[in-house]
Length: 512
Image (spheres, rainbow, N blue to C red):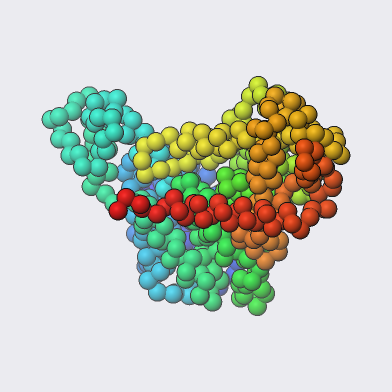
């Protein structure tokens, strides 16, 4: 990142750096820092650095007494700006790793008395994961280009290649140079990325300084997002467990905020958490929890759009796109598992208006859920199409769910019906249809997070069925869901326990 602006630093910039340094190290006044970080930095960027990088840290070091932690914060802030306004190359991506490595080492080396607002803490960690994601996508694209140019073969990694300038020519030279740069760098290794996030979470849980507590909380959100992007949905939810009402931050004025309130005060953090946790709930077959978390955030966003409040927030241009994604995903989970008092009616109405025709085609067997499956851009250490694998797995899961949904639609019409008649409705023989009735109850038995202190814990297994049915000989009797019998819970629990035992048994090596 070239710094042509080093030659002439405007007075407004040096004043800004001095004031920002004071807010970080001495005054710790949140509103003053918020104005400097959000409004003043944006204004200066637009006026002086619309398409050029900010001056290097060395250039402005005299304005902050050469404080290494502040210089690391300044470097991250200005590097983030450069990523936003330029077409970055591989050197910028590798430099980005050095920027975050320097910053986190400064923060974790000691426990200096510094302060940054929750917004700033979230932006640092959110950009950290974003640049890791971008680096992985760049590496995958580079691998594809190396295959096309014949520099590597199918199934071969370029990690051990050392391509000389004599072995390539033309456009292949740029690909070869990029490969050599990657091979000579340890930038963005996933173990190190997780390592910094986990260390920040740990220090945030033990420190009494608000800046560390903010960094720890938002490191949990960033870890959750990263786990989801890597396809570990259980890990995504586990990373969010520290975010509960029992975690309290005491600010300079002795006011207290819970972790939930702090996350809620930074809307982009709340949005990221809801989106990625919802994806994980859905992929873990916890449809009611997914409906709850997406329903809550979508209802909040609907109100924010109407009042115009959301459009006043930074990065508000992202909100509409993310809202549409979650409405699309809500169409899936509410179709599979119709909510009962979980999702606001205004949100359900929006789902029906936007996606009702597609859901009707799905019920008719004319389409699948592909168009509604608005997942994030998954990343992987390999070069497989992770999105395609996730979609394939989800499609496999949906086949029996659609059959169960059809069964439910018929049972909603009756108080009793013969198994043979239900089987004919589903174009099946009675003997092959009976297991579906049992499977339906088992599939709708879901882990449901407890409301209140921690909504990401596993909670208890509960039935998400909005009807209750049981069989007497060859008749199916249907009544209200509230009238479930205790003996049924016992048998379902035994089935679940049996599944766990079978899963453990399959992991036993019997070859010896």
